[in-house]
Length: 367
Image (cartoon, rainbow, N blue to C red; front, side, top):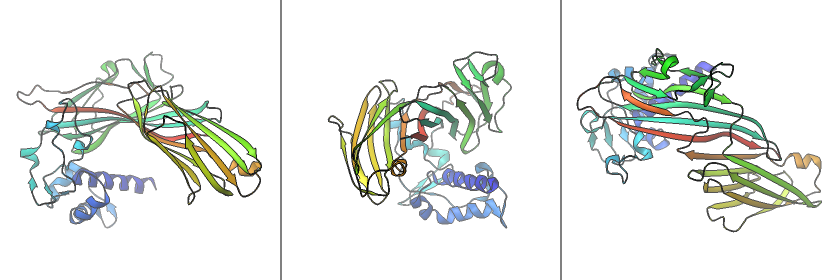
């Protein structure tokens, strides 16, 4: 089973590298290209070539870019790039109106670095953290001509392993590296050197457990007003710094099967949120577009049941599931000190874009 999952992940990655983005529209417009890729990657059901750069010699169709890529060079702030700038094919492409884009002549020398962290947190019904882990990775996508060797430096006081005798501000439980990474200077200077392969690839995977400050705290409260009426309040407090914020937040709360109606209300001042009872799925859906750090928001729910509440019905209520994203913020404090080209090539000045993103993987609070 693991082999099949790994192969499917590789196929999805290659499709994304060649099309720029992986969506239903991109698959529909690039069906011939994707069929050609699949034909080269698998023969008689056996995987053959699954590396983006190795497939280039066998692929003759050009991708059709679904949406035009904005010109990042004309952005308001020259030190930032659009989030969609990374969604470019690794080979020459054709736009939907038939205009050809040549990678060799039109593309800037760019490399995108993402430090992605996914959180797994379990809260008790009184808001205390029962379990918490961070699954992180450093992910890159290279558009550099000539495939030069890169040097990536991490925190100097980075410690690998909880039982290590070293002390540092960033302590990771374990990590693993891409095959292309040279670790000669990692132990002494926390320096990684490698030649980036074409397309998107993961330089480093890491895991961190134990005590860390959760970005959001959830405080639920349930009160039985009458045998068939319940009132619930959920308070969400953002504990990220004031200059950061949570985006695209959704909170889902399953309701008991015997729920007849439920009404939601948000406290005054909550202009960016919306809460409703989805009767078809029997759940409360609370969405918040943006929740700034050091602020909190509260939702109250009135639940009407078809029959008197019992302990079994109470167990059907919850748990609270929260999904969110925090741009330019990471909890582990793992930092990229610098990203350089190993050799000094005159006139070769690539653009280097670094982004930090924290996302929820499983953020659950019991009721």
